[in-house]
Each structure stands twice: as structure tokens, then as C-alpha cells.
Length: 281
Ligand code: BGC
Image (cartoon, rainbow, N blue to C red; front, side):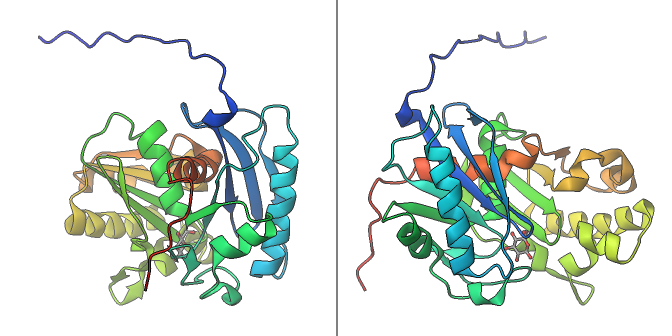
């Protein structure tokens, strides 16, 4: 029998400013920011939340992002004032531009999220990405996927269904698997946590819908691990028994919970080149 690898616990020195990055998670009801130690994926102080403004237009959200950054930046332990900021958003985000608006204000379609936020922050560099991509990245690096090789599929069950595919630590962005068409329906309209509430489904009925969804995603992508996120992942015993056995891929619940978006956005920004390189036309 192979002996278990020895676990070595290393005491890390306190983070320097260069180890820190701000991550901001824009959601339908709240906008949350935090300062992340990018060596560990831990928040170094409490996160700061402001309700999402109504209407949640790019301009209104930019003002809230400005408030969040100025509060976080005033803390004793904060990143360098010219460090890049990561922001996640619940839509397709390609090259910093939001290209969809399934559950957010329509004025976001085509908005240059990165430039709008950067301008509101006095020119500070911003890197934006999809919310599920941020959560998936955080789980892959610091959470449930940290010892997992191969393909991790993160599925978030909330107002919509979000997805992230991470292959050996490399994110394949904007997969939008919540909008797979299954049995003639947009999958998230039937299997998101909101669909369960809206239709007042029993957990058993909801579990059967998840079975349809997860077996379909499994058939298409053959992942090595499913990580389930979103509020419902706190109570897997309610729905997992109805489909776990029908899915061959191991299914685990997200570990970083409410902070996954903040952490993923922060490490995304921290890992990018310091200057945004614009591709020539
Ligand atoms: C959006 C995705 C988002 C997901 C979770 C979906 O409706 O299309 O971009 O990741 O909701 O917020």
C-alpha cells in the first residue's frame, strides 16, 4: 500500500502590499468587494457590500464600485494604489466588454465594463470577467479543485445558471452552459435555483431536473469534477440524493461560498500583465 504523502504546514510571512489585490463581485442584489491575499485566496479583512443600485446601469454601478474601492483602499492593510482591480459580472465578458444581459439591466449589452470602471477609478487598471468564471477559478486554485488535475466544471445555481470550465488551472472563459437548450428549453429557465422557487418545486422534482441537466453536461464535456456553487450548495442533502448516482463524475459543493467571486476576480487581475495591451486592428 502506498503511504500517504506527508503534509507540510508552512507558516507564511504576513502579506506585503504586492501580494494583495482587490476583487469586486457584481450581483443582481449586492455588489461586494474584498482585499485578497493572492498567495492563499483568503480575504485579509471583512468584505464590504453595497446593495446593487436600481436601475443597475453601468454608470450607477460604476459609482458604487468607486465607493467600494475607496473604502477598501483606506484600510490599514491594502494593495498598492496602482494595482489592478478584478471585477466579475453576471454576463458574457469578452475583452472587458459585456455582451449579454440575461438577468441584468439591458443597458449593459455592449458596455465596455473595463473602461467604464477604470475611468470611474481615475484610470486604474481593471480586469473584468464573468461571475461563474471568477468563482470557478477561485475554486480550482484554492477550493474544491485545488488537488484536481484535468477538467473541472463549476456550475452555479442561482438566479441563473452560471458555468466555468477550468482545464489544469487554465480557464476557458464564457462557456454559458446555463443557456444550453435541453428538451426545448433554455436550461436555466428550468433548473436554476430561481426556477425552483418560481415554480414552487419540491426538492425531489428539482433534483430530477438537475439530473437531466448534469447528465447532459457530463455527456458533452466528460469533466473530472463537478463543483456546484450558489446558495443551494449549502444544503446538498436536499437535492443531491436525487441525481448523484446517475452522474459518473464526482460532484462536490463549492467551498469558498460567498467569497468565491471576490477571490476569483482578485486573482484574475493579479495574474494579468501590469499594462493592458491593446491589440492593433
Ligand atoms: C448568465 C451568465 C451568468 C449566470 C450566473 C446567466 O444567466 O448568462 O453569464 O454567469 O447567469 O449569474
